[in-house]
Image: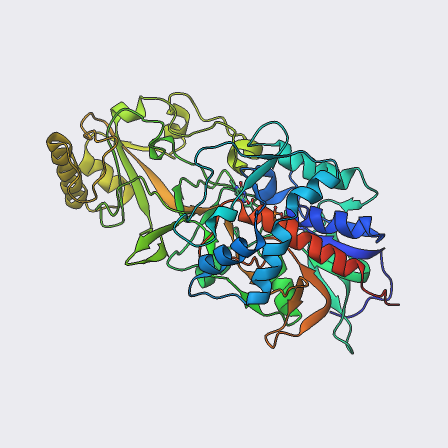
Length: 489
Ligand SMILES: Cc1cc2nc3c(=O)[nH]c(=O)nc-3n(C[C@H](O)[C@H](O)[C@H](O)COP(=O)(O)OP(=O)(O)OC[C@H]3O[C@@H](n4cnc5c(N)ncnc54)[C@H](O)[C@@H]3O)c2cc1C
């Protein structure tokens, strides 16, 4: 991208993306004396990315040596350089001190058990999950992060997506960012450095098809603004990529064109037992799992390895009238998730509005229902018959399901299409110990940094709260190294 004759905005450090990673980078660079401009694609109020709607937990590890062991084990055969793991482990243990030094109120989750995701792996006792303020869940932690930016003279340009990195022809240094504002391009000069913190590719279906294993499409329960822009920008200036096939998913959810993000179905939360019969089938009209879809952030054990849950698309939740009449099919309690917290769609108490919209399909017989959703009527009728027989006998011979062992017996019958859904992607430009984005030969692209889920360190297994923890850790590293660059020009 050619160097512009005139810069519209000038800063020392330009940070692209106002989520947790952007906050940590911007605040750190600012507090070291840099003039910081923060670009955000979403309008004010919809900024915050996945961080805004997350479960709000962040990891603060207790022992760096144990943390090294644990992350090494989490990476398994998808190894990550030891030096990166060490930096992660050292910095992750400083998240609480950093937040507290800025007036935060770190509180350890009081859940029992504490949520160690892989207690069989060495080093797991390093896991300690925290949130800020009196309650776990939406939204104190995000409010704290956001306030750290807003209480400083950091200029935030909302609705200003970064589009291109401006690179010098000679040294290949990153000199600034071209962004869109009010329908026209603007050039933002970064005299010391640019930090990309614009999240993952949860809403870029082409990248999902190309990079995520075994799924033709997937929908997010997080921000609709994360479209892989940071990946495209970094690739355009020669960045290497890593961990593109790793993501926090899949789970199963309803996605409709009218709403940007996915709906989590109450009947699939077995903890909140609903009356009536329900199974999930694939395109052949057959069940493929126990419907609990219990995973560790999307992965299930298979022959001693962890693989993403199988999602033969399209999938359908098939259920009877007892379940339909048993209350709202959607769990709208606003604890986390973009659909609950930002979209705030009012699902009808008796599901009638969603039936009228065609999100829920209904037919008098199972065979008719199959015809309506394009499944083989004989196969679906056979599956329902088998399921009902199992319920009568008190056991699910095929998949060993033990809960909600209720027959699909009371017509009319219903179907909801389920799609693979996810929290976030982990892949993106590869970064080094200094949070610099590197080329395939591992040399850094001068003055270009990243943090957060855009190229996260997690290559295989994921420990819950590790993402926001990493945003804070690598956000600080990126912020301080970018601020320490000699200004150009
Ligand atoms: C429902 C849910 C629950 C979760 N719970 C947890 C949890 O409890 N703990 C945990 O650790 N992780 C959790 N995660 C994952 C975690 O939220 C994310 O991985 C993390 O918040 C990512 O932070 P980030 O700063 O990298 O990106 P984000 O928070 O997604 O922020 C990226 C920002 O960049 C902006 N942006 C995008 N493109 C551009 C562009 N071109 N120019 C400028 N701005 C741009 C976006 O609008 C967004 O504001 C959860 C995720 C979801 C969806």
